[in-house]
Amino acid sequence: MLRTLALALCVAGVARGDGRWVEFRSDGISLFTNAGSRPGRETLVVLEQFRHALGKILGKADLRTAAPAQALLFKSAKEAEPYAASGAIQTGRERIWIVLAGESPLTPALFRDYARLLIEGSTDRMPAAIERGLVALFSTLDVARTRITLGRAVPPGERDLDWARVHLLAVDPEYYGKLPVLLNNLQRGVDEEPAWRNAFGKTRAEIDQQAARYLAQGSFETVPVSGRPLSPADIPEREVSPETEQKMLAELQREREVLAEYGKLIAEGSVASLERAAALLPKRPEPHFLLAQRETDPNRKIERLKTAVSLGRRNAAMWQALAEAYQAVNQFTEAARAWRSAEQAATSDADRARLRAARLDVERLRLDYEEAERKRIAEENGRELRKLKEQAIAELRALEARVNKDQARRDPNEKVVPWWEGPAPSGKARGTLRQIDCLGRQARLVIDSEDRKTVKLLVRDPSKIVVVGAQEQALGCGPQKGRRIVVEYFPKPDAQLGTAGDVATIEFP
Image (cartoon, rainbow, N blue to C red; front, side, top):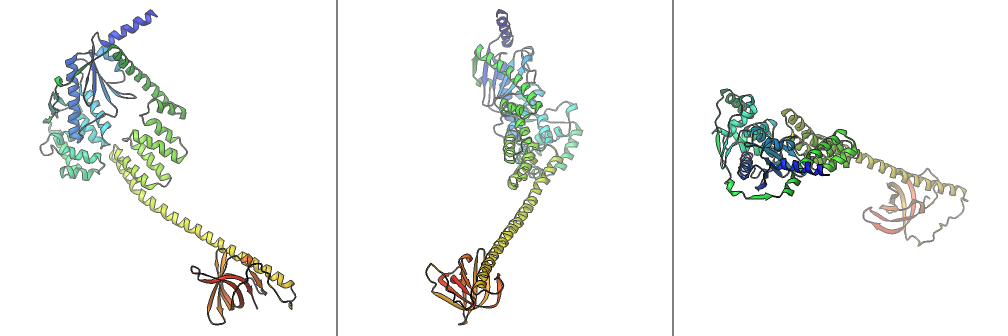
């Protein structure tokens, strides 16, 4: 017990560097340090001016990292080493940690990582060449309190076309001030050619040719950028208690353990392990994306993919999977939006062209689907109509067959007295049966009466109609062969069907 306590106190002494910890806060980042008040304040000012300058170029007034950023400035690299094993910038569950050390902690490598972190946290995907050029350009940013100098050349081995293109657009008087216009258009998803012409009046190919010549000449100017009116003296200091200090450092160590556990769960890849990974780091998109790939229910798959893209909006593969999932259930409007986001998130010209073609093809798929649906519905309606007609004809023929059977058994000289329990029909039509219209389970008789008028009568229920004297073949739908007929009916006009009443009895003299 005593040995364990002694070891803990020893570690605490190393972590503090035998110095007190203080905190400085700005609106974009908080910084904890045991290196002293002056280095802490000056480091925070540089980080804030860096964020401000990059925001001006990107056309973003207030750049932010994807999660709150917290910097730890250790007095020495030895003190920082246990916490920087995973890199100077580490993305944890609730915050992003920036681990710094020494008298000059802000190196070009740190600036590259910080620029990339701010771009990914605050912007939609731009072409990869543009993002690489911006990161390289800002790796050499020079900050002296409120004076910012942009454009110091990177080492010769790092000078490529991506860096030269953005450097030219940022410092050349012909283009200075126009670069934010291009970057804003690209972030909004405007196609590259119109975006370049809108910003510079030139195509990207023309700018690339000029950038290649600019790179070859080897002479690179710098340009001042107006900084924030922020002085180290303006930043208040807050002393950190030993308990808070230890809690903070323990949290950072725990983050490393969590990241390692998360990596193992992702690598294992089972549904159970991916569910645990999603619970462990709920702001990471990968578990949701991998779970969606294992999902068989289309709607649940879409919901998982929507969660994934909400957490990883710069991932083209995730947007493509969502677009394909929407297409699989014929939701073409949503699919087109997802294809557009996939195109925006693509990092290469070839991928952008492929995804653009898929997006444009959605309209053809939608039209093909709608045409197929129209044909299917028309065929179903036709089959149903034929079924109803055939059923009505069968019922009429069955009725006629029953009447014919009864008639054959009856004495020809017997007077037929129809049996009827209800009210007696008051209407009677004599004439020639010209047409029978089948109307589903009903039928309409069209009679040319003896007084040279056309009478239309409705058979509402063939099973309740009394038919007398039907000796010929069964009645069928359509035109009739001039058969003489006497119909008794209940006067009950139906304006929609054009009938004068409902048939009670039918007699064939």
